[in-house]
Image: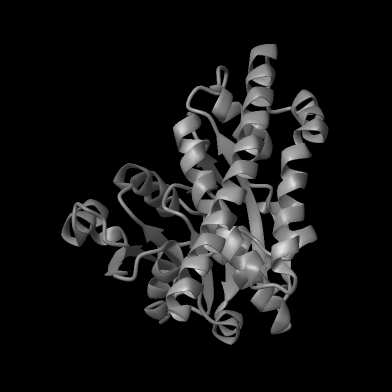
Length: 301
């Protein structure tokens, strides 16, 4: 018999966190025969055989040769057997009742976004970057209720809805684009705080910088596809630059930070991240405009 739910995990060069994720999945409150686990390996440098050896019989490992988390999720979905899909990232750790809660939520919704909490390596003494992420990372409730999409690191979808919406796109903010496309197909995402997972916070500034360099480029591509996308991008960039003047109060009120040192560190990183995102937004914009000018010059020549 087909399982009730297929757990779909994109993976790339992260065997240590993948192990933590699978250990948590093996301890779910559902009976083991009621769910399958599929890991889509996205060209990890250790090779797919090493990933299969690490996973063992606990999960099916399939190749995802098209680079990107979106294509990897699609590769996992293409071999899934269940009528419900549970998407989770390889560096997320689901709560013990994650699958049970997610399936319960799918009884009254076709798409469900769950909660993701950032965690620090030392909860009592987070680094400034970790303190920032403890406050601001993975705001899934706001994503779902204000923007209409959920992060695919904790996402439950009925198979029928996924097939109607189609797979994730490559090279953009695929979570947001998929959520918007779902809305146009008549499928609304519902937030359920009881469907819980955790994700390690970025530990230092280089990790945060790499994240926001990638996210800024992906969001730029997605924004430029919208009507008046250029104006929206310029306006939103200035709002990002000014946002710390408002958001620093969120740091001061956050129940997740327990020391003055952590709050001060988070505020410093808040201003640094938003300044970086502003400058990166204009780097991406100027890079594209320069490429367009060069292309136009070659065409005229």
